[in-house]
Image 1 (tube, one colour):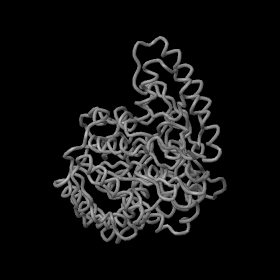
Image 2 (cartoon, one colour):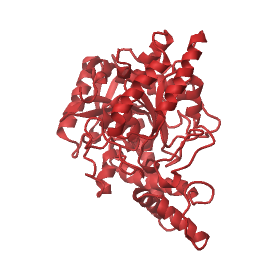
Image 3 (tube, helix red, strand yellow):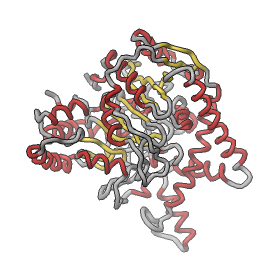
Image 4 (cartoon, helix red, strand yellow):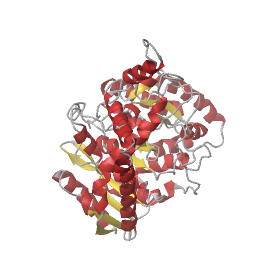
Length: 485
């Protein structure tokens, strides 16, 4: 029994029935990581040995316990922009290279209550700004399907670790596609919940009105299992919504007869690789055979999503990143004459090129004389994008689109062309702009590299997304495929 090939839910059932011990599960993944992690570089902070010791303690607890929570003793990796008490949280930035938080993010508190085991903090584009994990201040994570290619970003480390079988599940964050795009590139499941469904307390802010924590998993039921744990109102996050959290697992295994799936014409346009288009449409046809009704819809404003996003997100980043000045915590420049020079040198030396680019874009958009022309106009476009989604959802239950315009690109291929890099998220950013939920699931391969199908749902209707995604997964069998097999 290769435990590392099993998903979170399967492992949970094995531990619940006491067929296996937490230490056996964790050791299986640690052994897998010892083989592949040196090639992939998914962890900024590798906690494998700590995880093994923690799992042995869980064995003793399990022997005495009459009942245990669903995630008890299960290994989960955490994106390194989510605060973990006593464990470095770097955001893959030099400016936070040695920062050790004094508190846990709410999602970490919830996982600890379940008795989970952390295996490591995963690499990301610095401050989650990027689509390839090449913007990390430390190193580039590699795609487990092809080590010459990127894993996507910004949650590239989380997606690569799950894709390689180094860990069964991980948490990521999604501001413009940062869970779904790497999930597509690495052949795994990535769910961005509705904005406000999961607490952002303890998530290091990039763009506060867009950021959302979500699961990256091997199987759809694993995403549902994690959502059952991390979702819910948090008094420490004013943007989290006080809304009942359903049992997301109950949606998996249901049939999809009568569910209306919309195909937005604006997502199947020039620039989309023809093979990707055919693979995605073939997946939709399989859902149609299962009883879903396919309806073409139009969402005309979504074509402006990238432009509006790259005004709003950098503007919020410019404001959020002002706190990194070398005064209270984080990196501080060593040689300076006065306070102003200390600020400027600290930020110049501590931030990477992409972060500086976005700070400058955002500061310009918010500056006097340009605020109305750029930021205010972008917010108006955002409202129109939201209305497009709501109009579409009057006709359909969910939308189906490609997750990305092409498969994972080569490392270094787009680093000199920021515009091309930004266009990697062309099909994902509108979901964040509207605040609705989206999931990416594997739907095939092009030239041996995974292709993702994106399903987009109504606000707070992650259940229907999981229902349809699970149905397709059961037909495709793609969740059982690993690189190199």
